[in-house]
Length: 324
Image (cartoon, rainbow, N blue to C red; front, side, top):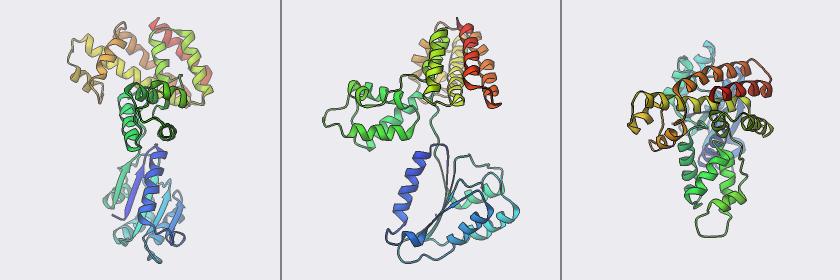
C-alpha cells in the first residue's frame, strides 16, 4: 500500500519507523532525486506532495514523499479534498506518500475517512505514566530486541527511571549493551550506569495519600526543576487516583475477584491488583472520590495559564489535607 498515516505523541518511536521505511524504500544512490520532505500544514505544500507522489521514479528504487505534521486529518477544504480524491487511488506502486501528525486523526472528517481507505495507519502512543505494567513490558521487549539481558529488579529500576520516555529508554539500553559482563545486568549496575530520576509523579501520588505535605511539596519542586511539564504531572496524578478510586469503591462494594477488579480499572495485568489493594488499604472511597474534583480543578487552572508552581503547591496541600 503506497500511502501511510503515522500519528501519535511518541515521536522517537515514530522517527525510528520512518527511518526504517526510508531504508526499505529508497536506493541510497538515488535518494536526492526520489525523496521529498514537506511541511504538511499548508494547502500548497500538500498539493505539491500529491504531485510529487504522482511523479515517476528517477533511476533505481522507490519514491518517498513525506508530509510532516500534516493537518489533513484535522481540517481539510473541499478543494483539497477533491485533490485527495483524484490522486490517492492512482499513486503508482513504486511511489509512497507518508503523512505524519502528533494529533489523533478526526475520524468524522471526509478527508480522514478517505485517507484511511487507502493508507496503512499506525499509532505511536506514549504509554500513560501510571500504567506501570505496560512500561515494564516495554522495557523487557526493547531490551530483548537489543540483546540486553536484565534481571527482574533491573527491569523495574529501569522502568522507574525512564517512565514512558521511549527515547531515554533506547539510549539507556544502548549504554547498558556496552557493559562487558555476559551475566544478566542487575539492579546495582543499572543504578550506577543509568540516569536515575528518583523524583516521579507516582511518588508524588504516594506522598499525597499518606498526607505527607512537606514531602509532596518537595517532590513538586524537584519535578518542575527537572523540567517535568505541570500538565504531565497532573495527568499522571489523575490517572493514578482514578485507578485507586475504582479499585477502592469496588472493594467497598464487596468485589473480591482480581480479574473483575482489573477489568473495572482497565489494567492489563490482573496481578497488579494485589499491589493496588495494599496501596488503598488504609483509605476511604469517599477520600479518593473527593480528590478527583480537586485534580480536575488543578488541570483547569493550569490550562488557563495559572502559575504552575503556585497552583500545584496550593492544590497539593489541599489534597494532602484530605488524606491526613
